[in-house]
Each structure stands twice: as C-alpha cells, then as structure tokens.
Length: 142
Image (cartoon, rainbow, N blue to C red):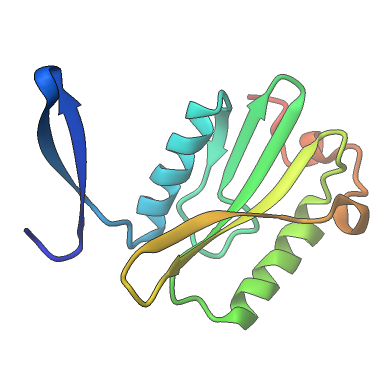
C-alpha cells in the first residue's frame, strides 16, 4: 500500500471485493475536482470554475434558478486566512438567499490522517444585498 492513498472496496458479483486506490486530495485542483463531483452528483450544473488560489470564489453552480458560489480552502490554511477569505467571498459576491448560497468549503487534515472537507454557508442576512449579482459576476451569459 502506498502512503497518501485511500483504499475503497467495491463489491463485485458473488460477494468478491475488488480494491481500488485513490490519491488523497492535497492541492486546490484536487479539492476542486472533489467538490465538482459532489455538486454534479447532487444535480448542480457547474457554470464556471477557477483554479487560481486568490479569488473570491472557485466554483459557480446552478440548479434551476438557484446558485451556489463556492470558495475552496485547502488544508493547513491559517484561521486568519480562512476568515479573510470568507469576508472576501461575502463582500465580493453579496448573493441574496432567494438566489442561492455563498459557501466556503474547508479542508482539514485530522490527526489520524483522515481529511474532512465540507461547506460552511455564509449568512445571507449579513452579506446578501445585491439583487443583480448574477449579471455583475457575468454568470448570466453561461
């Protein structure tokens, strides 16, 4: 077994298990792929994505009239950087609740080596004030 890889077992016909190994996510690109996989499995259409680290949001997803604008935070990011990223996301996007959610997906490596990765949703009452945000962010063209 190679360090830094997860093992997943898939049941094959007759109760036989096959083993597949998947690399653990470590980079922004890895976590973007993980997030996009989750969103698409939930029925969201990915409208736009960015692989640059210092942007207010990395993924824009749409399902019907609802939007999800997501910022990815990789492991070992300091609390100060995480908080300022959250503030940047809220100030830049300003998405009202009726249009969708602004989320910061944070990755954290636990002491036992497992990786937790999931969303923190920003409060739209604090940040959601721009009803023309979709046009301003040029997402309506997609």
